[in-house]
Length: 88
Image (cartoon, rainbow, N blue to C red):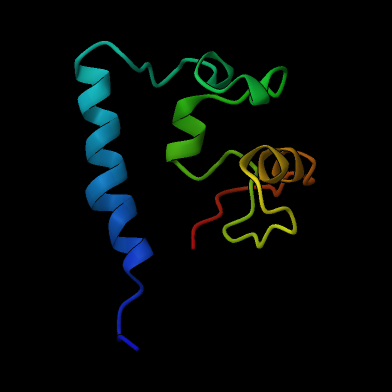
């Protein structure tokens, strides 16, 4: 039991820092399609930038029914897109 939700802190401190380091090293492009790195995203027209800006259409929180990584990804990609910016 804590006062703060650490997930919100990791987005800013860890995810953004790691992504920007990869951009700086030329290993990640913000305008690049996500499918370049994750084939499951094929044909969705989603960019790395959209994921980082929370404008990808994915919900802020999702509790999967599947228990394996492939099942969770398939389930997640079947979700209907949410409009606008979604941040948890």
